Structure formats: C-alpha cells, structure tokens
Image (cartoon, rainbow, N blue to C red; front, top):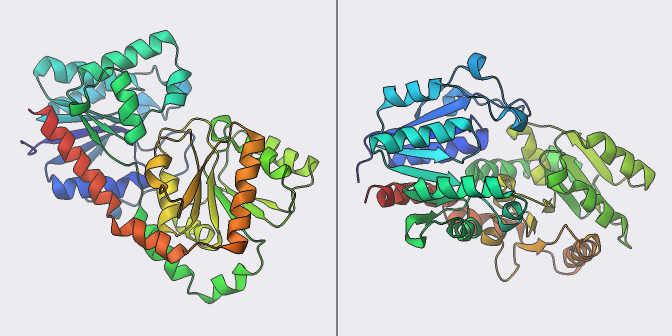
Length: 381
C-alpha cells in the first residue's frame, strides 16, 4: 500500500477532528489535509495551530465564503489547484455535500487516483432524500474505490447505495476522547466541582449541540413535561435558531426552573458541564454520527442516544450498562425511557469511572484512524 502522498479533503477545521487527523498522520506520515474553509458561518470554533500535527492548507475563503447549506452550490476552483500541487497517490473525500467534493472525485477518476469516500448516513436521513439526491449519492458511492463509514449503520446504508461489503472499512465516529477523559476527571477533583455539584438538581441531564429542528429538542422538552416527577434538571449547551422558541416553551410550561440554557461554550469550558452532569441525552431525529456521544462516554456519563443517530448503536453496549437507545419521535415513549433512567439513577446508579475507562481503553481514536488505512488499502487493490 502506497501512503507516501495521501490527501484528505474535508469541509472545515473542526476541533473534534484534529485528534483523528493527528492519529491518521501518525500512522500515515504522508497525509495532507485540505480544508475548504476555516469554519462555517454557523460555527464558533477556534482551533489553536499548536494542536495540529499534520500537513494542511485552508483554501481562500474570500473566494468561497464561509458557507452554509444554502450556499452549497458555490464552487471554489482552488480545490483543483490544490490537488494538482499535492499530486496525491490516494484521495480521501469527506462526504458528497459540496460541489468541490464532486469536482475532486471526477479529477481523481480522470487521473486514476484511488478514491476513498468517508462519511455517514442513516436510514432515517436516507428516507427523507428525494429521488434525484438518492441517484446522485448512489453515483458517488459507486465511483469511489472504497468507503470509510462513520458506523456499522452507515455501512449498511452505503451497501443500499451500491457499495460492495468488501469495499467498506467500518469506523466509529468519535471525537477528542482523551481530552475529556483526562480533564473531566481532573475537574471532578477540584474544590470548585465539590462546591458546585450539590447546587444542581439530580439527576442532571446534559445536551450539547445546535438548537435546530433535526436535533429534536422540542420533542425532548415535551417528553420532560410529561414526567410525573420533578426530580431532574437539564442543561442545554449550544445555540441556534430554535433557542427563543425553546425558552418560551419552558416558560409556558413552567419548566424554566429545571431547564438551563447555558449558551455556546468552547471545548475547555465544556469540561465543567460534562463533569457536573449525570446523563447525556441526544434526542436527534436525523444524525449521521454525533461526536458528542463519544465525548460524553469519555466523561463517564450514561448515554441516552437517539436510535436515529448512526453511531449510537455502536457505542451503547447490548447490556445497557453505559446507556440506552431512545426514540425521540415518540414523546410518550421518550418520556418513559427518561423516567426509567431516573429510576435507575436513584436505585442502581452506574459507575461513571468504569464507563469512561472501558471506553477509552479500547483506543477509539487509533481504531478509527486504522479504518482509514484499511480504506486506502482497499482502494489501491
């Protein structure tokens, strides 16, 4: 397998991707990452250059603009120039959502460069796809020489799009687990943590992410409203267009003294919330593979992961010792599952140290990076 010059094309510099790319570069020193932009307009991330241990470049956003879904048809021709300069012997393309991804695919196929498609998709998100979009995705999948999937679920859906099972390397979409494993445990040893812990209602649920409809926050609040007990608290970390309506919903249903809107926080500040929480809840209605689930596990939290999330079934054990798959599309069922979790917290609490240790001991970042090496091996056969 030739890995002396491997290019990975992805949309933006996201802090949760840096450890993965660093590990891929450790296993494949010839890695060069091309970012289409430094960040998207809906994101507030900042990544220190000192954390990046791989070769990379960011395309000129003045020609491309910080994009959103609505601007996805804009095209930055600099991506082809960057590929010509890099002269890759293998190309990894992160998803199919931008014109640049398609242009890079066609460029690589014309020059005989092996292509690995990296991405995640679930049955629920595929079901909401129109016929034309489905045809385009299928074409992309079939043109790729190999696939690195976010999850087992995504691998099955890629097969439905035409990928042969032996052309798929199955990964598990995880984030900066070592950072949270180390820093959350350190914070729990501080005087500040001991002073704060008793001030919050228990169990304390935590959500981290955008406030947009597909994240299922409105169904979550509706489910919490139906609970017979008031012995719980919820911290919502993030921001987005739904925030005003969610705040009003809580006020209308007299939940504002149990639901706390914490705003957006960078990674370092998130440590405090992961340390203080007992349960992490992700009520997404559509989600290819949420990174925050792995952050929560590394922090020792019990997971309530949506069955509509691609990676949740891979992370939650069959014995349900570290979490439970939930159904956010059914508020009554979701309310029952939350009530079940509250009862378990009271009567048979989980061992957060064991949850975190067992997850991190499996070296999830290294294993994810190995899936990319496997994908490149398959593509170059």
